[in-house]
Picture 1 (spheres, rainbow, N blue to C red):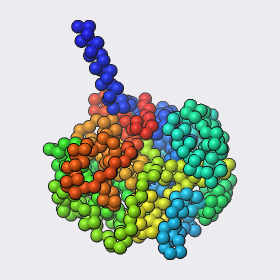
Picture 2 (picture 1 turned 90 degrees about the vertical axis):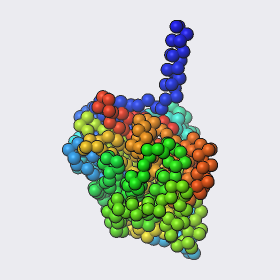
Picture 3 (picture 1 turned 60 degrees about the vertical axis):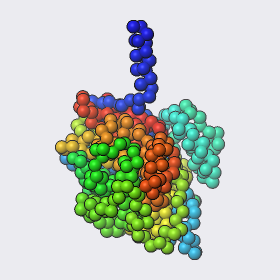
Picture 4 (picture 1 turned 180 degrees about the vertical axis):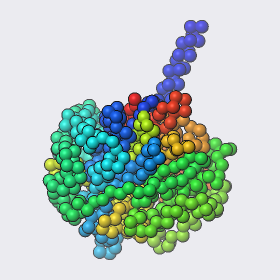
Length: 568
Ligand code: GLY
């Protein structure tokens, strides 16, 4: 008997070890984000009576301190809000091209893209939107003052926080990569005397900047000493910023992209992100198929997803861009009728070659050289509160640590978001994504994004809040988590941590993370006409779902990178 009991105990322990990251449960509110400190900042605001929007603003500012790879003051982002009273919004604080930007700014005299020009240094920087966007969200949907919601971030910058392993690792890498960026190496790499895991990281310059924003709001950032230093630092690295570029920055509240998948209402980010439209159009196509007798990650399952992904990414390359500059046929792309037409040539037994999915001019495509996935450092967090309000935020500097330009004396990095424009229509960007006229560079325009902060509801109640980093892979990551939960009944932690795969039309390849596709399945897919390539794990999904048993909220942080959650 004793032996049996011992055996059962060992078995229980083993099962726990091999189980997915235990869920985070909260009756009143949950925050799931890259850093524990940022999650705690959000919970502190919720406990102080703030709503999910107040907490989201606090988390954003905290991430600007604790997660310099992607959390930011010098970048941009998108926020999807669903309030319990029925209000819905997409807050767009995507960066804008400065006034000096022009269509051919990244080309040489013979019309070729100059490598690196759109990704590092002053010309890579778009006008930052985060500070103005967070203020807009707070004004329209928050309930606490800016002064209060910024307190946790200011404390983290001033008093410091212990450097986690993944940040120490990234800062070591930054020290090598950013050799020409003295201020960046001074602030983040102690001039080569590198931070070790567990070291205290204090950022007095950043604390000063945050306090200016706390006191003065937008004018503390877009005007005065911070703005002057920003313009100066950008020009030192070849940028064309003027004070007017900063003063003219405007965040926008847009109608979220909306759809429905098998009874779940979906809200996601509309243009200038491609995320919401591509996600909903893929789900619309999938609704014409059934997963009932299709095994999870069988060749058939992967084929179904890959085929809808190819079609949506082909559409993305032509029809998506900043809606203030290009007429995006949003209604058409989101319609069931269009999805039915788009998937009509689906062949259940073989891959449709990307060449025949969208007949782009062969001459334009001949030279496409699939670009490696150098960096996909964006960050996503999700927040829910005791009233049932939900906020889904994805924010970024684009690549890890953005352009590498730090604003001298003010302690924050600037983005390299200009690379998300089509430097040369028809030529892929750093994620291998192709864009066309819709995403050509123009002064004041927002560059196309893949960020896909998303909220699902049923009968007016929020049931799932999610999103991910990962450049081009963001949209297919969000798609797979929804597919895992809605079509395969997975609990949230399993759906979030399941290995993933990705097809983006060009290159015509299924990329897959370790263990996402078995060798047997890969062989079947090759017989169907697919090319496959292995890649690292990707997509740090930070999600929250409604708990069906106790009625509170369950959080799931993607442990593969470094995420955390907090609840109360
Ligand atoms: N910079 C990545 C994105 O916006 O999709």
